Length: 252
Image (cartoon, rainbow, N blue to C red; front, top):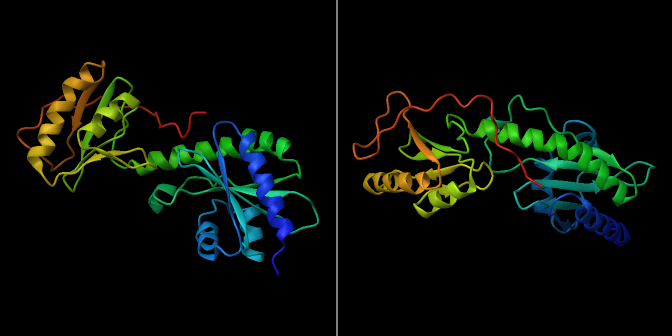
């Protein structure tokens, strides 16, 4: 039988914890009735240690999900030992391909004491640091052949399907791209302009150049081997290597 007191305690703890974490976090309680959501959530727990071992013995009956506006999520769940407190783990973004997670260490979860204020400090100083690092690496891996842009230059890369993709480092550039038909993936941050209408695509590429240039942001068009751009697209010098820069997972 479901313990109503346990549900209230978990939900209340999660609410306080979300309010104490750096940045803006919201908390959502998933009761035992939300079986499908709990099953999907358990599959996305980004852990191969403490939390994975707990879930192997005790299937997820309820949980609280802490969410950040940028898509980052944590899951708070019950402990099944004699100690008070809870377990917390990172949740892997659902939209990124499996290949992006290869060779990225799991930001394994941790056990929390029965004090959400002290636990918030523990989560911020430990789990979130490792989670941010892992998220940045996975999102970078998801870029694939897309070369990261620099603050003063947007690198546009032709894709095998005829689309053009880019990962701008400046939000102002993203606004201009969106206004000209680029669609952003909220998890990877990649902006993509489909190539179904090559004339519209070429026109968009021509128009974004002057607008970005007015902001002091240059553009570079990257052509993979065996791919040629439409004749009407602007020519550019291939970009210099971007070094080891990776996108930031979250700014708090």
